[in-house]
Length: 473
Image (cartoon, rainbow, N blue to C red; front, top):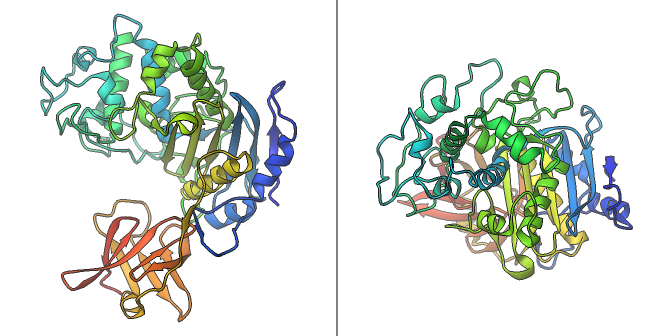
């Protein structure tokens, strides 16, 4: 079974038997899909670290609004890591930005629902779909309804020139992303936009005349005692207790981590325990109000607009199921967290690998099973016979349409006369189970594979994404 390193049950808040539960979780990882009629499969965390080529993972579990335990698992060959080791939180930064905005909007200088232009001077938003009747505001930037473009950011190797936040918004060199535009009428539609968060970043720091990282330190990190967290990009050279990111093949990211000047969208360095403190602070404020946020502020922060998205959080479920959550992915880092609003139970998982989203999902399912949470159970799929003639005709190599990513665009459907597999560009071969005449599912990734035709050409739908047969198939 995987060894848990640096276990830390919070002083005065540890529940009886937490160490035993942590050990059970470490040997009880669950895939995304169970197959009806097959024995339930569980995995040891060391198996999955190797499988996904992830060097280390940091976990914090929250019970009744307190950190029950936290610890780090790593491969034996990996560098030392403990519960103070920093990881890039990526898009999880967005919820922290939402909380900052709530803290700052008590000031007459900054309002959630006023046009943001006044805070951007001397620069101003280029003309787009905004208007006096439908302005770009801090609120619609934070809930992704401002109509802003540029969904995410690739990051910059430390050896490259790093753009300023304003250069990112304008799309000026050395920015690797295009200019942020207001492409749809603000308030009309949900469009996930890291570019919009970068506009919010500039607006907040210019209106308060304080650098964004310092605003975060003063208004969020210090009040919530997130002592190991920072929005410094890049990290100071003197900070050695940091994870080093890894690509899907297990090789290390250049310089250990890319630099993200888009701080509001993706710039947080933190630990699983510090993120747990943040989640606890937001949940407690929502429930009873705190010095950090009043109940009014916290409930506004967690009120979804479109697509279940609030101000930096997905908020889903009702009653005991209601929870806020987010995941994040920077180059070489993947993380996720979820927090139940009523019970104060939650989990944070941070990894240093591009395949860490698979591992994180399996850990969350193991935690949910161990504590009998009402959600995060594997989906149940029924095995059903394929139309073999159709299926075997689809065997071969495919490429995703409109592909964007760091991996090779190559998916190979295989059949050995008995078993079906898909060779994926990130994790390699994964088992497929037939679920209908023209459909299969990967228990490991959760992807549904549909066998289709388009203008007499073979076509796969891989997790809802179209893939046509490769020329070299």
